[in-house]
Image 1 (tube, rainbow, N blue to C red):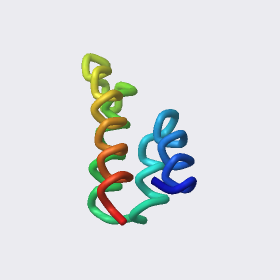
Image 2: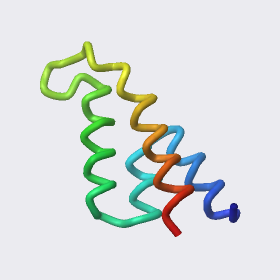
Image 3: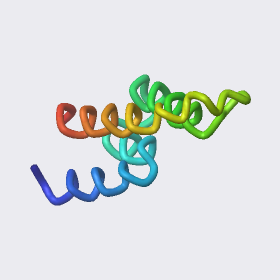
Length: 68
């Protein structure tokens, strides 16, 4: 694990799509993570889905660790 990966994980803790974007750019994993993260804030009036923040964070960690 490089220092860049550690920085990405720290970014992903606060804003998961930003961590994914710095790893893979604006590809499919970024957009999936962005949608998960937006749903966690009640995007489209669905605040019940607030549990999706940990899912977005875990997805971001997975992408950061597995994509090289």
